[in-house]
Length: 195
Image (cartoon, rainbow, N blue to C red; front, side, top):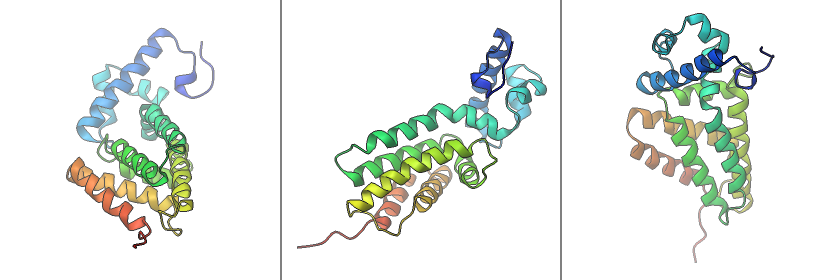
């Protein structure tokens, strides 16, 4: 018997649950190999299910991504809340930004998908991306209040920077992404008074 609601919260028959889990596992593998624009048919083929089974659980690619990334995005949001207690507001912001870059680099094309989703309220990824953005905004506001980050920097600026760095890291390397993030964060920082 099924009830309405997002797929993971439904009560599913055992075979439906197995198909759901198999689709997520294969999606993770296919997206890791080919990026988030990979063939959905390839996912169903590897999972050994029909296309209709995929679409009954995940009506869109964004719904599949949201289910696949849900726990990671919740972890990022939770991390932002925990980092509000970090003794250094600036260091907390940097730690969080690094975590989001690493998350966005999990699958090639994810950074672009996340940027689109934050602007598209109809996307299944929108709410999860918005929660991550809200967490970053709180950390940014704290760093601004501490006087380490420019007052005109916005959460949208930070999110765009993070996604641009992740995209560049996909094209080069994680080490290059780290360098670019460092440069970007430095550009948001206020100069340290000398003397």
